[in-house]
Length: 359
Image (cartoon, rainbow, N blue to C red):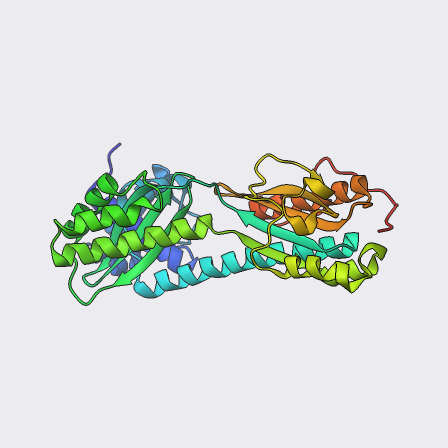
């Protein structure tokens, strides 16, 4: 049964009043909210019919009405107006997302510290993105006449957005046309290709249009650079000195300098994807400074096409089985934290603990 326009207005008023007050809504409140030029008796009759049709519920005989699930569904499908975020809201959301990214970075850093304490060896944790990432889609969304949001999605399903404020007015029609151009010319291209394509477009676009294109493409470049970048954390470097192999400062210093380097990586291009526990012993390491040491590492999943490695560096006499098992567990925990927001209260699924707890 199709509801009359008046019933729809009443239903919408009941729902929006209830959302605000969390109290059953009466006919007087509906009349004020909906601005209907009808009597309270008429509104009560309409509300009674909406209740009979299953759109409203009456918790108590003398109380007002509250929406039913059926009423909410109709509201969401047909009656709800689109809500446009304010600039303040978008800024808060962006700040919260940035805070979340910082929190993830902290989790990885702390995981490295945990591994260093568990193993008594220097530990590292790094993240790496797929080697080839491209932009799959652009969307330019109007906020007001002087502001818009650029949304980019990569071929690994990573979504990023950025708010831009302009000195000139930007119409929705202009943003739609530019979105079409961006999706036609700048998608499925590598990071290196985007600036070249932008320069070609500049020769044919007007000054105002190119300024918008330049902002959107510049943001896409930032996103691809961020995803391509590798983040490395090290911990427990001084642990080396606790082992006989490195009590000579002459032997320890080159390795400690290597681990302190922000560009340190145990592999030429560490990707971690599908690797599982991995052990590089002595000469198997590509870096000359690691030729007399061993590296044990395990991969973890960050989602969004991003992977990482967590591992330790130490003498070739390390207890490979014990350290590999501990690293695997930590790596699995990292993957779980990222995907689930935290570890389950009873430990990771499929894992059992023992009472043997010596380092």
